[in-house]
Image (cartoon, rainbow, N blue to C red; front, side):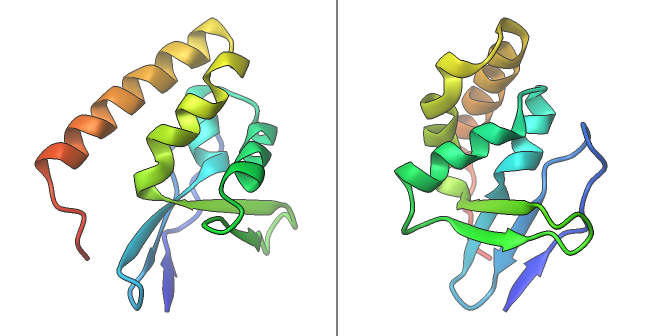
Length: 111
C-alpha cells in the first residue's frame, strides 16, 4: 500500500510517498524541481534513465503526471539534470544533493 503525503503548494515542500509493502520511500520529482525553482518538465528525463524504477501516477486534482523515483536515486536524478538548470536552480540542487548524501550516510532509511 502506498501512502502519499498531502500535495504541497507550488514552490514549497517536497512530496514523498511511502510504499509500506516494499519498504521503499519515493520522492516526487516535480515537487523536487519546484523546490529548486527549476522547470518540472525535467522530470521526464527520469522516465528514460530509470523507466523500470519510476512510478508515474496521475494527479487527481490537476490531471498532470507525477513522477515518483526511489529516494536513493534523488542524487542521481540531480546529476542527470544539473547541466539543464540555471545558475540559481543549480546552486539549490547541489546544496540539496550534498545535504541529502550526508543524511543518507548517517541515517537509516528503513520504514
